[in-house]
Length: 588
Ligand code: PEP
Ligand code: MG
Image (cartoon, rainbow, N blue to C red; front, side, top):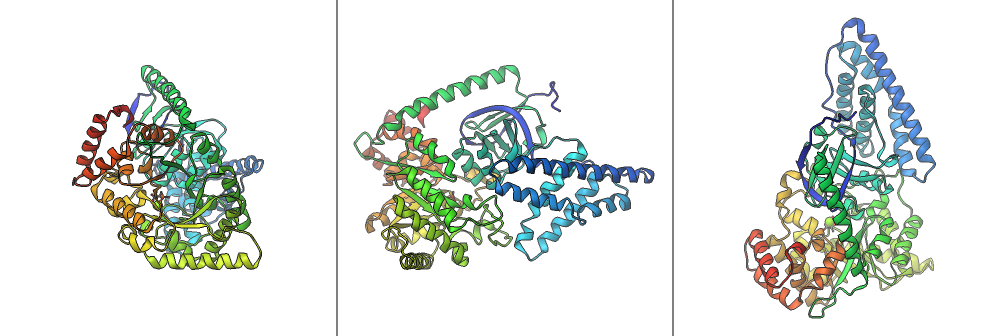
């Protein structure tokens, strides 16, 4: 229970999704190591075993209740997860073994459970079966549930929350975050994470205020605490004092008014002062985002991260299911274009049915196009679905994480096969569908010229490009300070790609998060980019900026910036140049 006399605690983290939220803490995924540990008198051991048994029974009942509740809604993916958890509650290796531990070691149930869980997790690590290895997370959740019951903590399910809450968690996977689309999460705060982690990106898309990289928020928060999440300043306040609460409620109101104001720009053209039209597009992860994309005035979707369609479920989406999904997006966005990126799984995004080995460095591992070229049937089914959807609107195909030209050749050859198959089956598709690649590895930038001859467009993915060029894990809060979009090496690579595109006459866009950052956008414009794809919420802000700057001036600015040697210099120079050009500081 929350203690009303608890002190206000202010924690600074990384603001990753704008907006301010105030709500009650819902603690999720607290690391298990902080369990009470003590020995039990021999005579009390049977009682301790019984206490454990009751916690397991309570866990069973809870899971059954959640499953019933979830079954009323359309949530196949959740039901499967719950069934796996129910099975684990019947598992001798977990339940009987914990009881044995209590008896043999004469320790409390929490401690015994923790030891057994550790052992099981270690065994899972050594098993040569990726599906089973992937079940480590489920064991963790089941262990947490029993533990919470032992400790008398209240548990709520993220996909089944009844009240609106602020989720406080050690870490959230992109799959966990996708479940927040159901509308009960007011905001979230996590110990781990960086600005361009997929969890952060999804929070922006779902318009959920979020702060990550707080390091100790799960240790300091208690269930039921009031919490403020300020996604702009990256601050979390637990148990805010009345004055602090008033201040944040005021700021929230001001923020909401400002957002409404900005939406009025929706129908205005995105055109620079010197008359150059700029294409502002949206990135999406889930089909539910489409109405918001239109409301924010996007002129198309520049990046549809289709891997989310594969998450939180036990099976793979069939070709038909994918077709339906892509068709809906394309139709709803008509007459605007939709760029569908083929699955970018691996890295931090996993699904149970695609076999990805446990890797030391998943960001450098079997992911994205590499995975697709290994699992050709999965890739082909997606390509067929995309091609079929191309008959219903303006659609483009994009391959992620290209490092070598051979990958493009292979991917295109599988695409040709898919086209041939559809032709012989007399199924319609657009035979001239544009095929492009994400340029998000340094090698793709250096190879931009030959690559430009192989594809119809480039889209620069700076989230990964920064990760791979500056050698920083985009999910790691300890190196988040190195995420510097204005780093001269990044600007030079962007310039290189733009020039290669111009030489070959193919369009070059950008879909990394920096496209939606106001302090960075003018330089990107000056570097010659013309298509910018970003989270929907950023579009009105960027449009306001576009309408107040001139392309010719930004080109000059970019040329000068390219001669500088540090991101701090670029930042200072850009800010002062824009200020001199009359751009109000609060916009930048
Ligand atoms: C990128 O890497 O910049 C990008 C847009 O793709 P993702 O964030 O999905 O890796
Ligand atoms: Mg990427």
